[in-house]
Image 1 (cartoon, rainbow, N blue to C red):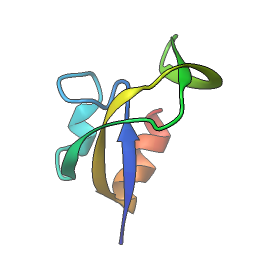
Image 2 (image 1 turned 90 degrees about the horizontal axis):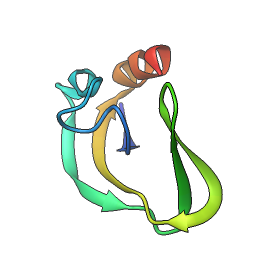
Image 3 (image 1 turned 90 degrees about the vertical axis):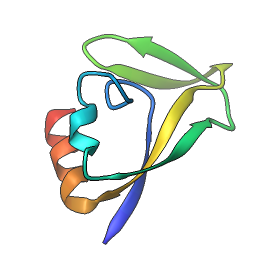
Image 4 (image 1 turned 135 degrees about the vertical axis):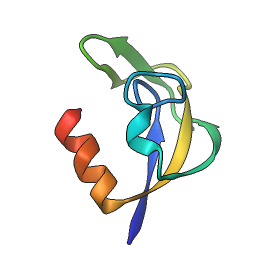
Amino acid sequence: MSCYIFAYGTLKKGLQYNYLLKNSKFLGFAKTVRKYSLFYGEYPYLVDAPFSHIQGEVYEIAYETLKKIDFIE
């Protein structure tokens, strides 16, 4: 089984944790329909406060990959 994720921070291509997606299918670039505020701390995170559309990448991933991502992030 698989699921989809929207990567907007450290999982994006060329960044720290993208290696976790090495066996996943990159589906393309996307942006959020709604506007959010994006903050950078130890990890980037979104807040439901309208500021801008967030650019990211969409992947189809295995649930096992999701478990690894959840453990790290």
